Length: 181
Image (cartoon, rainbow, N blue to C red; front, side):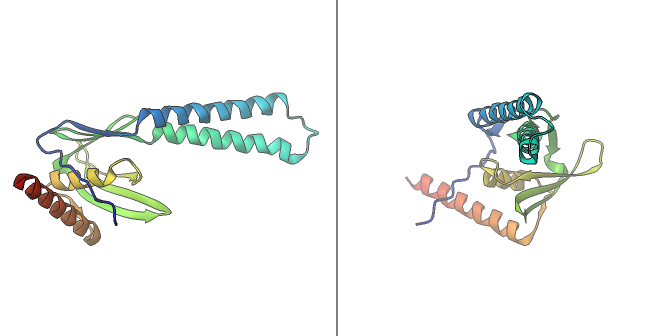
C-alpha cells in the first residue's frame, strides 16, 4: 500500500519554519571537521617525501573530502521560514535569502544527477534572480505546495502544476473528511 501524502497549508498560522534537524547538521559538521583536521595532522607529521605515492596523496584526498563536506553543510539550506511578507531561505554561514510572494516568478522541479528545485524571482531591487536547492530538504513537497499556494505570479511546468493540483485535491478531501467527523 502506498504511503499517504501529508501536506499542510501554512495559511493563517504564519510564521512557520521548516529546518534540518540540528542533531543531524552539527554532528556531521563536527565529524567532517575532525576528519579534515586528522588528515592535515597526519599529512604534516607522518608523511615524508620518500613514502610511496598512495601514502603521500591519500591524506590530501581525505582532507579535500572532509573540507568539502564541512563547506557543504555550512553553506547548504538550513531552514525555510514562511512569514506573511514572504519566504525566507536561511543558511548557517551565508546571508538569508528573502523572496516576496509577489516576486516569485517561476518554480521548477528538475533532475540533474539529483533532484533540485529551481526558483526564479525578483529581489527587492527589481533584479531577476535564480535560486536552486536540493529537493532532499525535509518536507520539500509541502514547502513547494505552500509557495505555489501563496505566490500569485508563480509559473510552473506542466508536471509540477499537475502535482500541485493533486496535492490541493488531497488537502480538500482531508478537510471535507475532518468536517464530517
